[in-house]
Length: 331
Image (cartoon, rainbow, N blue to C red; front, side, top):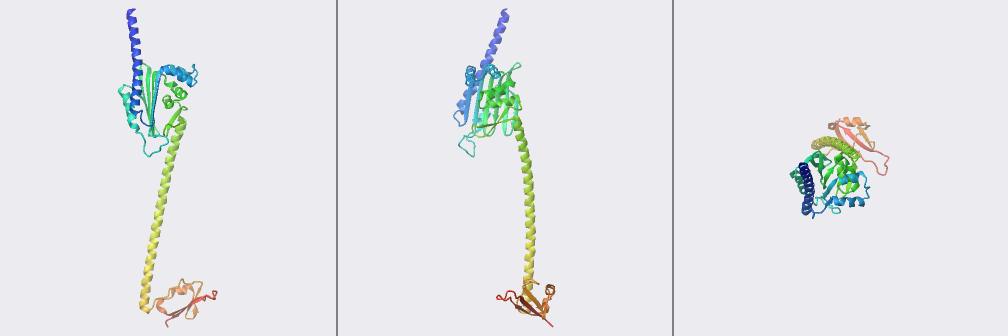
């Protein structure tokens, strides 16, 4: 009988020691974080012990017989710590607070105290890690740490923890950060937090989050297609410019040849040649050796056969009367 009594006393002592060590661990982390980071903009910490739970349930008007109350009665301690990178109302190009320091300090705390990494996830730029500590088959401590580019959140629970009931606890108590507990139970319809700037949070279900990820993939494909279309148009534009440059080069060569031909004719006949605007111009009549000539005849006329050219311009007072170009060829 004495042996049984001593054994029971030893078991009770161990349980009390474990309970005290868990509470001290949570209290130590709360103290160290508030002392080191409490003065930074965007820092927030909530530390609830068992003696505060009933008061909090009454404040939230939670039914004492509800599943949430049952879950809370099994807990000894709740710690929620958050740090925002940006200060609301003060937009800056760079974050006001560097999150890596507090994030690394928290991860180091749980690694040093023999917590087991239960779950890790990286989705839409947010890193999630869940650490647990067990006593036999029961989970006695749980820590959930999330970190994105804009905010870091820690949720620590101590006591007898049922993973399936954590989502209801987070939605009922309405403490910023506790909503992330739904991500442990893996409920498809549970709220999942997607944070932006400051202390403002936007909540989506897992189904909605999957839709957003699909939309993100579709937008990526669409952007790739648009980029390809833009590159094709740019290539087409370059080819058209090259074609235009070739035509311009060809036209310039023709101009040089015409200038050279005009110079040769000026040297040969002792005067500059007369260039007609276009053979067959409807405003001019072409006459070769006293006979009206067609555009084809003018085009085929050998310049070496021309003796004289006489141009009679259109009379401004009689615009209906056409001008004349009279050409006399060599006999």
